[in-house]
Image 1 (cartoon, rainbow, N blue to C red):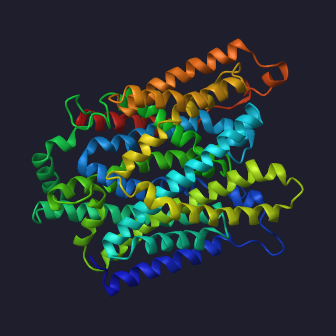
Image 2: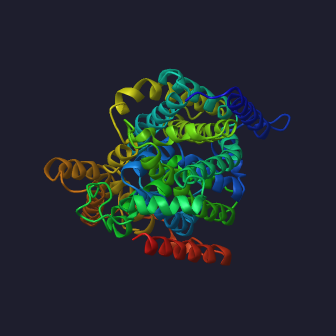
Image 3: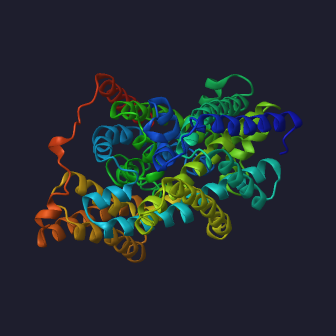
Length: 522
């Protein structure tokens, strides 16, 4: 498929407009230079709508649109559990985690770990996250995004990665998180409009022009196996989504780690004007998550009928774009690129934040604020360059990159969730216990992977979570914290966990919608 002149014009207008808006929102008052707070936390000035939009824009990227559509092509609607369960997870994060983080006035997740435990825990986790963000997240977004551009336009994958990296830097490098967050509202609107229109056209084609509902009815009738939310043990894809584990098992651990303790996600809530504003943004994001399967999963299922002979599942979404009318095809292409570059910008900003504030600042304490901003910009560029170099060797051989990402991160997420949850809510947790849980997560996961390979990875995540919980309790009780260390525990009685009526009603609405969805597609 090639883009027409009209499609290219639409796309070029989007690129130029986004860069222009980013520089406009990033401008500073005369005489004021950006400090670290401005660059990494947007001066703690983000309103709820920017927070909610930015959470989704950072999350929905190539690994979701391309990768999850590919998984929809193979697995069906069951993969939507990652989206729908995330909505409820967001509510819990807003209710119980965000109040603690904002009370601590932190920049990064490693910084919280240092306040709660010690510098050892902070350094270990900072180095770990830098590795994951560069070699897993950034590479996945670049590779899948470049693959999509290659499928749509024929541009070489290498050149496509260079374009994506350069574009993300062009609009985010100067303004930092503020530029990313305030332009993300445009990205999300474009993403939703483009994605819904692609789903509309796909369903209409399946029904031979009889309408969306007729197309959806045809799809469910022709492919009933693609609309099982809870997979049975005899399903060939049970190892990817093992039955009830998506509701009561390892899926919770994956989601809590991602939405609660993932720097490039939680960073925009740390930049909220206030706790209430941050919680409103999280609610907004939760409702958007309920909508996402219509945009990222349904097209993949539709492609089973419209493009049944794909060589790779991850080609489903780009292939469907070929059916879009001229001009609108350019809009959907812009929406896809918007999702990719917004995630790249968020990830590189978070890599820069962790490296600068958690590692570099410790050895350059006397430097000026403007110096730290400059270092952050350099790190952003270097992180993208490294990710471009290693993307194809790491991901080129995988058919479903989304599942690869989940499998890899599942080695470490149980320990991350354990050390954060116990560190936040159990005052006796010690630094040694936290380190043991973090390292034990990798050891236990690798052991199960080698010696119990048939165990579904999501069940493995749940089992390792329980083992790490035992380890952190045992280590903390065997050698209790000193009186000074005990004073670092979170004083829960001083944290305000009270939420507004609108937040509570929204939480109930999200829960009821989820119940309805799972009852319908059980």
